[in-house]
Length: 250
Image (cartoon, rainbow, N blue to C red; front, side, top):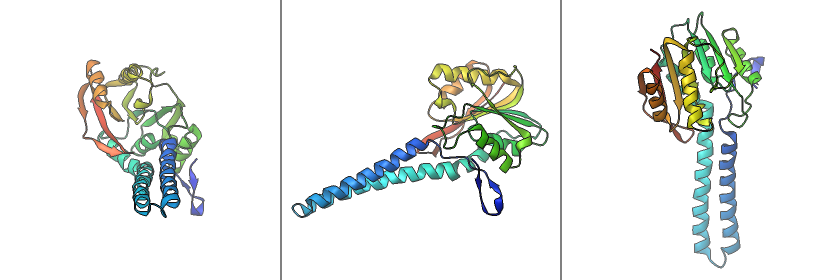
């Protein structure tokens, strides 16, 4: 849920991405350090040099694991806030668009898009899986929209990206960030991409931000008639490479 800060002013909270993985890296750091300390404590009198070397190696592994965990936290707390503005800049939003955010989570992209609108509206859909983002729920997403002052310009709804319930030619812009790779297989991902194209108006713009399979997404979009399909340079976030795919419906 959105946090509360001094003065009782609500502050948006976009969660920690993949919290189970972050916990796993912290656990690795603790185990490596504990193993190194145990090896040194048991053997330092009889084998001082070897035990010190093993402690150093395991200590380095502990520091590396802690570094991965810390970087994942920084990516979630700061990196993705910078990223969302860079992504939306690519769309050159005018202010009157109808926008669909597929896999919105806690509203990171959809809320930022709503802040750029004047008369337009955002529809944001998700299944709100708590394994994806800490505190992931529709209530928390709505709290974030209130905290950012755009609750009246955004609607959160449950939805399946592979079977969108909206009519064809409905939206000026469709966005999806860090969501498609979470689907079960390429068949589901290609179906979701076709659905996103279907609900776009002719001339509407599509932006997908995802990880290693973005080249495959570009091929699917081109095969289904999308124009001006472009891949951005890679960026590094959450210790993985990511890039965006943009296109336009004819």
